[in-house]
Length: 325
Image (tube, rainbow, N blue to C red):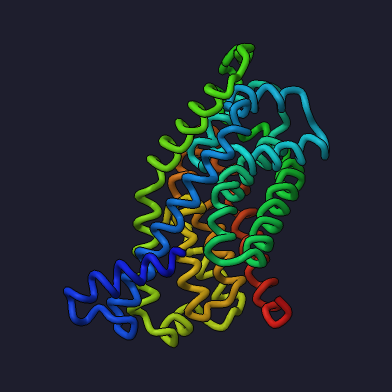
């Protein structure tokens, strides 16, 4: 459906006016990719966010904090990872919850599991991934993302992180979460779901446009052999470079998906693309700068080093297994 719509708009309508907009031209290929992916992603986003809004009516930041209060151990980490996956918080907006979790007495390892999972594994992004690059790559991305978040809590907690949280964070008194007891009517769920659509789509549409634009340029104008040379052959060094390239960028999962789609289409190994995606989403400089406001340099360094190491490991592993997948 989306391919047919893009073909009609780009080749039938625009192509009848501009002579060089053809399926064989670089401009035509780029425009077709851009129109198809923008429409597909925005339609999927709107639909999924609205539907999930009906289920998320209870998942406000205050309720998430209250649900996690007083919990520890493997069950708490599983709950933190699960809540991170189903709550609509990006990397930067997840950090205020970090303060609330600390104030509520939740162990830092559990808190960091949530902080990793929340931006990296998002239900709306999963739906877009399914529609754009298929269920196999989506399943691989989700399982590795959740595993990194779950293991990260245990590994980082071993360093006794509490000493590296800024002193003012411990002194914050947020008060008990005020959970409204009013009955959530069908109208209320609709209003909440539609508000979610307006807020989330309104916040990230520009990243969708930028991401699709980059992906369209790669798809239409960048030769496959050039991309292959830049990305390397899937070696450890090429994966490290992909992670380093991803760090200065900032996007949520939805915005970076079209770039990943274009890179996969040019033959870049799956592991390299996964490592790049994860670095952009969970290891971006804006998130690190905001996180530095609440933790000291040693904790920030450990957090970044763990994520970078995990992403490189994932990239190398799946590059090695690419003949099997």
